[in-house]
Length: 170
Image (cartoon, rainbow, N blue to C red):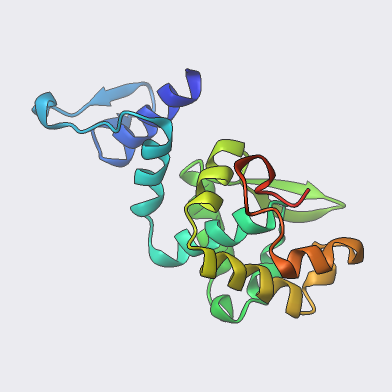
């Protein structure tokens, strides 16, 4: 599985075992019997996410709930992110390969490219936290920037969270 291989290499890079030296890659001398590599893609991705600063993890969680590209200024409207250097955090997440930037209509936006990462983040959110994120988006004026009106009531209800195949709203 190419994704499993890529994520394994990213975990090794996060742990400082692999380093990009500019002209090539170097491997730090370690006792390889002590290197713990999670056996599944889900565990690899969760390991990477759990190492993040809490604010970066929360940004990823919110983006996973939105399941749509989002502008930094929209994220800044969430009370918990007000006054934070959101763009700096998003760029750090981009450098880590967890989000990517896109330009839609000339506006900078960020998204989780990897559907499996988005699925795992969403599935591992506590149900109450997931509902809170859905509610915050639906209650705030920013909902009109992120969701169309026809989906707003379903969004507020948190529909689509019951089974694996419908964890996303659209």
